[in-house]
Image (cartoon, rainbow, N blue to C red; front, side, top):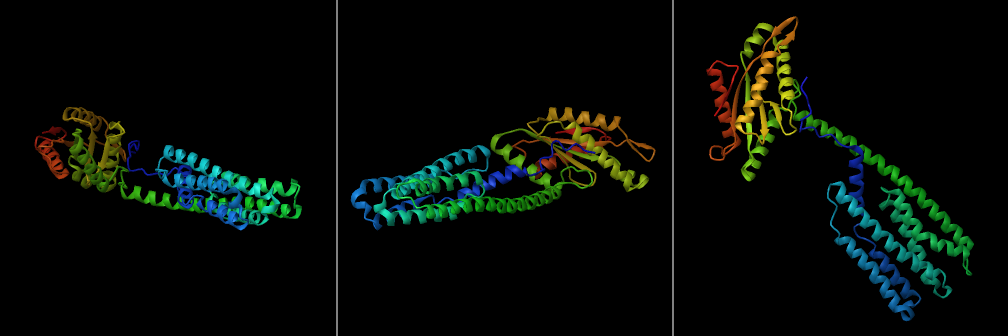
Length: 377
C-alpha cells in the first residue's frame, strides 16, 4: 500500500489543542467588555453615603484605575490561532482580571470595616455576589482561575463579617454559602462547557474526515484529481510570486488496457495500487506531492526541483517499476510507464494548464519513442 507520510491533505484534529484554543477565544469574546462595571458600582456606592465628599480623590483613583485597566484589556490584540499568541494573551488577561478584582475587593472590605458607610457596603457586597454569578459562567472554561476570581472578590469581605468588631456572623454564614455555591456552579458550568466542546470536536473531526475523503483516491489512497488541482494552482502562484522552481511529472502506464483485458479489472486495480506504492516510497521529501489524476495517469509535483533533479527521481522510479513486478494470482506482471517532465518557466507558462500541456507532450513523446522511458523539454 502507498506510503502516506507526505499526505498534505490529512487534516486531523488535535483534540486537546482545539479545546484549549477554543476555550481561550471564548474567554476573549465573553470577557471583552472588561470590568468597567466595577467602576460604575464604586461610583454608585460613593454616591449612596456621600463618600465622594470625604474621599473624592480616593474614589477617582479607584475608578480611574479600573477604567484604565479595562481600556488596556480592550486594546490588547485578539489572540491569533497559535499557542504562543494565545498563551501571551492569557497571561495578560489574568493579570488584568486579578488586579481589577483586587481593587474592587479591597474597596468593598474597607467599606465593611466602616459602619458609617453601611449603605455603600451593602451595595458593594450585592455587586460582588452579582459578579460571582457572571464570573461562574464567563470563566467556566478555566475553573481554577474562575474559582480564584470568586475567592479574591468575596473572601476578604466574608472574613470581615466573621472577625471585625462589627461582625455579622449570620450574614457571614450566608456569604460563605454563596461562595461555596458559586464554586460548585463554576465546576458544573465547566463540565457542561467541556461536554459541548467535545461534541464540537467530534463534529469537526467528522468534517475533517469528509474533507480528507473528498481529496483522496479511494483505490490507491493517493491524492485525487481535485486535490491535485488545488496543489498545482498553489505551487504555480508561489512560483510566479517568488520565482521558486518546481517540476511537474506525469506518468501514464504502458499498455494498461491490455492488462485489464487480459487479466481482469481486479488485477488492473492491484497494478495501480502497486504503482502508487512505488511512487510514494520514491518521493521521500515532505514537500513531494503524488496524485492519481486519471484511470492510469499519475502526477508528481516536486517543489524546489529542476528538470535534471526530477529526471534522477523518475529514473529511480522506472527502475523500481521494472525490477518489482506485480505478483497476483500466481502471476508476475511487470508494469511500466511513460514519464513526461516539465519545469515551471515563467516565459512559457501563463497558467497551470500550460505547464500540464508541456508535461503531457513529453509523456506522449515518451510513448512515441517506445514507452518505458522519461522525456523532458
